[in-house]
Image 1 (cartoon, rainbow, N blue to C red):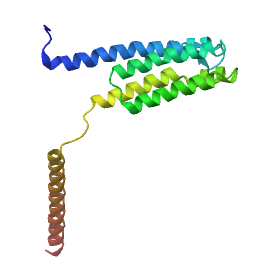
Image 2: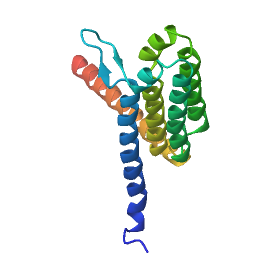
Image 3: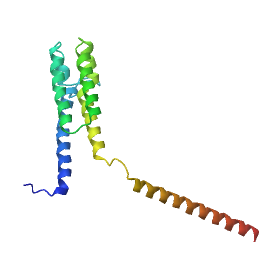
Image 4: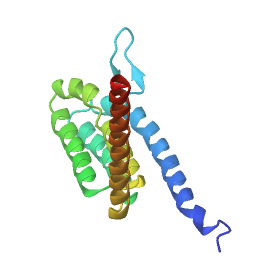
Length: 168
């Protein structure tokens, strides 16, 4: 039996998910951009180093990246986000398999960090309110209409007073 009140269990789940995603982001950075090449702006990670092994290195890198994709699926990422993440992995693996060109591409593409960004963005939008109810929209519309009418009435009365002052 849980001692956490039911009202806070959703917040706890979100906090736990955020902690896991933070750890996953650190892992993605380790894979893609942990090390900076001295004297340059370029960074690389373990995925780039593993990718130096022809074909097998890129296959291992794709398998590790697939672990991030599985994590995203288990944590409720939308299907379109999962498809985009899978495309990033496929592009990384396919172009990375080309000798030399693939290694330079891998240093710039950073599929794992891209995928964590996609996952974070997707999960954050799921935690936001989706929209307003029709009743809220009607209330906002009526409030805006009344404000506009009062402003127009106030302007009309002010102009009328200015005209009366000018006449008398």
